[in-house]
Length: 434
Ligand SMILES: Cc1ncc(COP(=O)(O)O)c(C=O)c1O
Ligand SMILES: N[C@@H](CCCC[NH3+])C(=O)O
Image 1 (cartoon, rainbow, N blue to C red):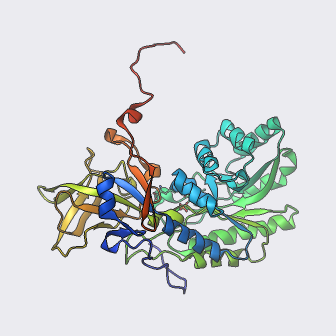
Image 2 (spheres, rainbow, N blue to C red):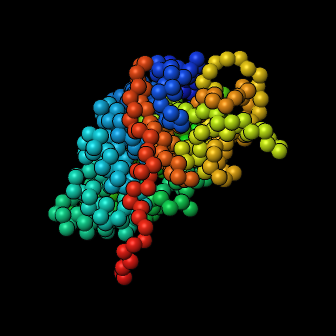
Image 3 (cartoon, rainbow, N blue to C red):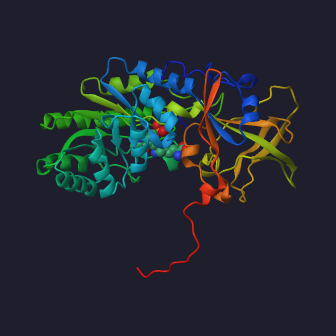
């Protein structure tokens, strides 16, 4: 799919914190943990998240850069708190995410608002708390921002999201930087915005933003997109439109399949940013989501039963597509391993959940040590876009989330009660005419 063109070795295959050999994860014995917390549940390693933040911050040393974590990757308050404590801000796409970021202690001046569908109410809410910047994705949105800011008698800071027409070489559903995608505007359109920005009395349009997609495993798409943004920035400077902030988006890929995926190291990624924007000395923003949290998370699940099917052997787990959608939605690979480290003969299973559709499949024809009912398994690299995309499909309550740190654990979301799941629903009693 993509080629690794950098000379530096890719990010290390395992780290001390994320090493789950012998059933340990951030110093916690997962067998013991699963005695305390009913499966399925998500576990995150705080140490592994901090390690990723440190890696990226170290790579950015000397630059005027702020990391704004893409909240959509994992909006758990404890995760956001961890980010806030490390000086990381937020990239939000809804007022729900804004509220989470503020509740977690992220200062408004470290929050950027992206997305093609910001409503006037959402814009008003974000302006009210004084967020750092809006990444504006259409002319209509720019006019709405001007209108709302004027009504509030404030100046909104804005960046135009450029669609650079670059193929991120990733899954089509998570590619965002091609001209056929709904995101951003062309450089031609952005040029017109700047030419006419004198008409914007309440919007300070002085930023550029680009985000070409997610789970990107090569530096080349980043390089190409940034070169296009940099050329446009130079053109704007010469035309007398100073740019104070360039937001390079997120998209850095992670290792879902050991021995196969070769993620780009943070230093190489930042190297590309430094190179493409060598003559730019303003503020830099980054919006990584997956890179900071994916490999720091695992989904713990037990085998309900082994079912010999007509053509295949099925391993039926207590986790399902409602707990982790990625395999069903994108045919995504996640490594799956037994927690117990005993030698057993290998066998081949289709690994499935209890939900009533064939798409509820975590892996097809996967080689695993022979399993039995009650065995504890780990589905790996589920820290990003796991719980954030979870649902209660088949009326399965949302799973618990647990934060681990050097041998200790804290439940950061308890398993949803059935009553909570149906809260707000009611029989059709009071019929009204609109
Ligand atoms: C605007 C924007 N920024 C950042 C991200 C985070 O992406 P990732 O999790 O791939 O780093 C996304 C999602 O792709 C996005 O749409
Ligand atoms: N939900 C996607 C990533 C989407 C990125 C958001 N812009 C995934 O699980 O891979």
